[in-house]
Length: 297
Ligand SMILES: Nc1ncnc2c1ncn2[C@@H]1O[C@H](COP(=O)(O)OP(=O)(O)OP(=O)(O)O)[C@@H](O)[C@H]1O
Image (cartoon, rainbow, N blue to C red):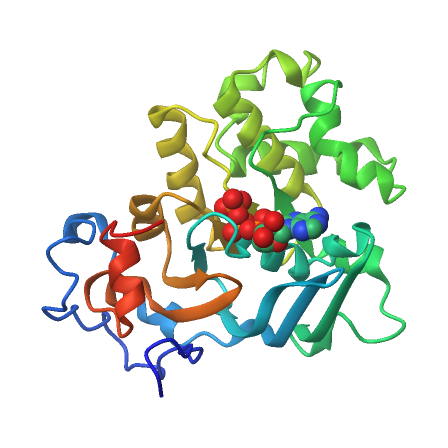
């Protein structure tokens, strides 16, 4: 295998207990400090793959943006997608909920499976599929509606009118996103009146309200200050109890802090993926080491 070939396989399941500590890899001196790299739970290591990206290539018109990507994401794990600007992270994220369908002139080959369902199979109901995938964007995008209605939105779209059901979902989602105590007395106020960090947690609550299986996050903290960022990072850690999370981030410390697995991309190719602590301290591919140690990108 050449050093630029991707290592798409995730590690074999390990016995009960913590993951093996990382070795003294070539990037150990420059990677994020070990204290910032959480050890991954054996439960995550033994979990089944929920998302499977198989041999996915994507073309915007004549331009190929993704090349034969193979990637698995285990249930109740957090997978970070990292790599320099333009390497295809967001494009891949959008493949997972078929958001690229909304862009004209896009052609995709390969398959993406959620559980056993191939989401690109003919006849797939894309609306139902997107209900299984919550999406949180770089810039928080609350609707110009009340806090309550922002969270209830997805349920209302599904035709749910029962007040008790809506109330329960709104409260559950706001508790889940860590916002309940801050907003419970002003649910009728506009979502636009919240701070940037609160707005992003409101958007996470909106995604949670319809109980998706997967939450996709595209640089969710890039517009936030350090305190709001750390709230979201804590939240991501809690969310994986109930969801499987894929996050695009430019911030390698963030990838190291929040994710169990990391995938490094370069120019539309998956260069290396594996356990976050291994990838950051003992990468197998020289290019990964150069990127995480800041030599390029
Ligand atoms: N709608 C589009 N039409 C044409 N080309 C696109 C489109 N969206 C993205 N691209 C191209 O596809 C490639 C991958 O872009 P993408 O946004 O997925 O990268 P990225 O790694 O997420 O970048 P960044 O970190 O800057 O957000 C880039 O060359 C980009 O210019």
